[in-house]
Image (cartoon, rainbow, N blue to C red; front, side, top):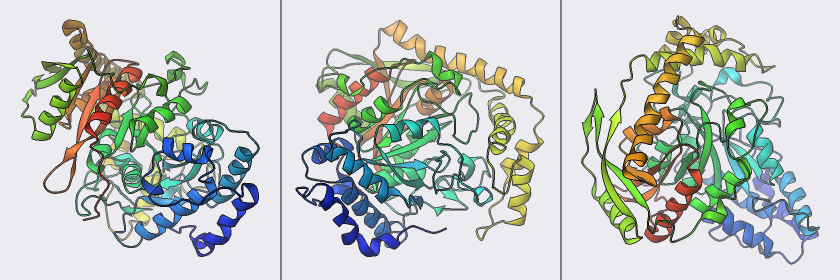
Length: 502
């Protein structure tokens, strides 16, 4: 794997490009790595920063921290054309052609999202290294149209955690093992680990991840950033390596709720290639709904237990109790709940069957790579085990599965309806505006299976230096309300902490 870091040797010469376009721009790079996209955009509008200088600054930071120093391994590949793209966008800005708030803002994408450029889309697998994807994923087109700069691809759990049960989260054959920037020996959680690590470490203000079961919200918790999983169908999945469209969705990983809302404005929209997007609401200004007093008068339920076959009583941490006090101080009424946990019989097998029937459809859409079937992938891994020697028991079990696509869909759709009702009945019975919990795992799983929206954001730090989180979730298409409430909490709590690389 190679970085495109030869540009780093002539950063100053590259930065001179922009002086030809806007001589009055000041090259303010102090603390740019932790500035929000909202702040960076305002700096650009005031001629205090150029897209070129920002890309150079972030690329230099990645060179310093990702494969050297703490060696975070969050970045799997950088875009060799990022500087040229930034220069074009700077020229557009000088001429008054501003595409929106994301104009000139770098974004990093998980390595399972197609980009029709010089970068690979490999889901972290050496088997997929070859010819780049022929077309941008729908969400990549949207980001480019909004003026965002695709800075590179982030590392991920290979094949989104469906290669082998023994693989640690955040490991891939292409990218190695991602590390948590707060405590380097700690876990990173979930397959979108690289995206969460990258935004926490100040490699870019915006990143995209994908989730089937907690792979956005869990890495956000572990790495102390804001992760938003939308309602299934709000964002397009076309051009993204699948587990199963019955539950997959892309989502955002940022350092602030405002930045997440900016991305939601750009990423919403119907995609003819993804039928699930046809029912989604469009044209919402998510940033316009953010307000410091959005929690005032709201009724928010919080789980004290999950009841059912595997019912689990909960003990809340001190950080979550502190978060609840903040919610109350902001004018929210908190309501204790027992949430039903439906029986999960057949779920895992159905989910893995989705991989068997949907992943090959993606593989045949790619040309110039080593594999075009699940069996070919398994054979490749046997021939090329890699120096870590990890196995592929899950891929082999998926290939051996006899569950049909129709059977899998029936199981998951039945379970989705059960989980949706388990969530829906709470607001209905108790007149709630949202639900909130800490990182108990059960809330994340419930929202994922239901296909409902969820937002994870920082709530504090443990004594060991690891971040904690608060988790807002709700009913279908409730993103505007959830983002507004999360923003209100964030403004009052100010719990975002930059990593110490311990």
